[in-house]
Image 1 (cartoon, rainbow, N blue to C red):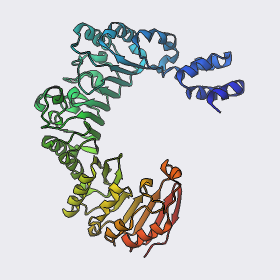
Image 2: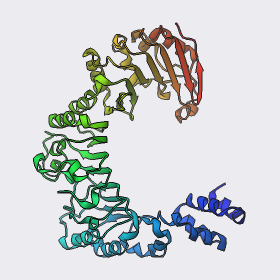
Image 3: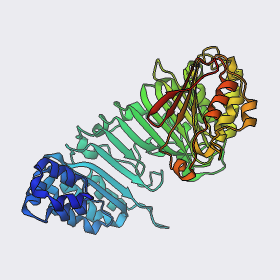
Image 4: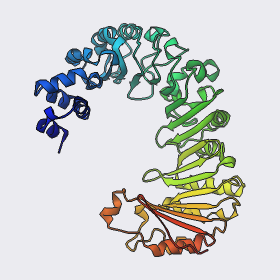
Length: 470
């Protein structure tokens, strides 16, 4: 039964709060239509200001007037405005509307479309949007000024953005404009999603501001669309070089670096940037990069202190390596190719840099399970091995590892606990009609963890113990 059916069948018998909760579960258009079916629903809807906060996205600026009847209904809570596909010709209409309503907007996402071929930024049009955004925003919590790409093609933001008054602003997403210095309105921002060019507009890192100068309260930074050095391209790509960002010099709880897809050019300066900055970062994530220098730098920044290593597939091609220190909470992860994963793990093992490792969690996916053939038996503190069963690796007989692979894995005599985790929510499992053969689990335990005193198999939410060789 849908929510619409619930409301149609017994609206008068439900408490107001429950009716309001049900209405909030509907899409805005459905909620609006349903709230007009009777006076009871209409009065409940008008009394619940939260129903009018999430207004529908505006795809055509000329349709902004359609939102007018609902703006006041959110009252002191403010509303969420999202305008998409904005072109410069829209700004004479959009800017006055924002000017009049900015004081009651809680979340605002302005998504700018690309300039047309041969079109340059219109100073007069951009002046209008800057003027509109120079008004105080007392309710604003989230501001997004983004384009389709990571190039700040609309120029710099004025320092007086939001009139310098946005006491509740905590999250900023910025790619369509750049910052050349701190703005008073951004002093309380804790989460920033942006690009290299947007926060470091000058080619020379020494001329750009440190991230904590721009955002003194920042805790989380996500940098997207980074390009590697030495790929032979010029122009816009220069905006994306990580080395033009000043290295971090103050604590950051979370940092995500996302390279342009398939960018595998060697980037020694980016690796050096990570090596210099990682000491200030608690959780460091690396995505979509093929540069071994960069992924090495991320993983190496905590390899000697890692207690937990997790190796799982990231998509149809890559492997996700995660180092985690349980005492400090420091985490490093990188999405790498299978070849890079093998080379990095082998290098860390041979270099005795996993000596504090206590727990190894690894997927049975063929891209991951082969890494068990490395010299894990040499780690003195490794006491737990966790297998994360990937249904793509399970054959028709219920075996998740081939006899050939099993024979190539050295016994890990230090492992005291073997855990096998089987998730049943994977859509492949019921479609394939496969089950895990316990004989496979027993064979794996006997060959790989012969000294294990405890064997645990977790199937969905059920945990059972199986006989271990020890």
